[in-house]
Length: 181
Image (cartoon, rainbow, N blue to C red; front, side):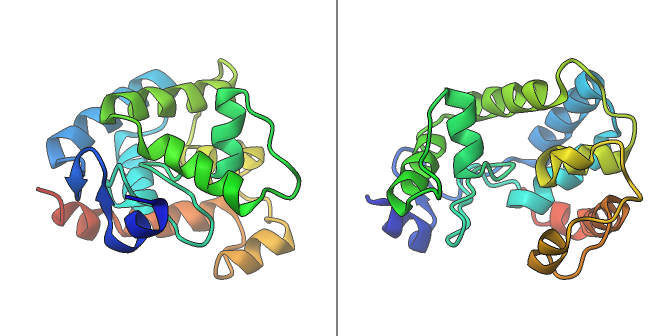
């Protein structure tokens, strides 16, 4: 199956349709992330639910962000030591999305840990806003009240600050978690 069909149909070539974390899996993942990197388990749970709804095979068809925490193509390339052109081509976006899609759930959670460790550089986060910024805008870790650049605000429905993003993310946890098995 090609990536276009996968994005349209939501099926994974290896695991089929709808490969998703269970409530228990999400609980264990969020507790381990909080223990290792800081922040609350609820913030880690909210992050995964906000980004992918708990779907390992989630793909944003416009940006090609892929997986549990929506790895952007340039982030995937950074993690695997690959250089992409500037601007990134459609073929490169597809290739990086496919790279994440081919991972087993275990490999994707390991890849997620590698990303978090490289992003934090041995530090721990101290707030739930910082947990959200690990994925949303890493340059704003530790800056919950600073205003995002105008282009970030415009691209994200008017979100102004990290604390606004985390408030929105946390408010949706209960309803999103209710949809998990």
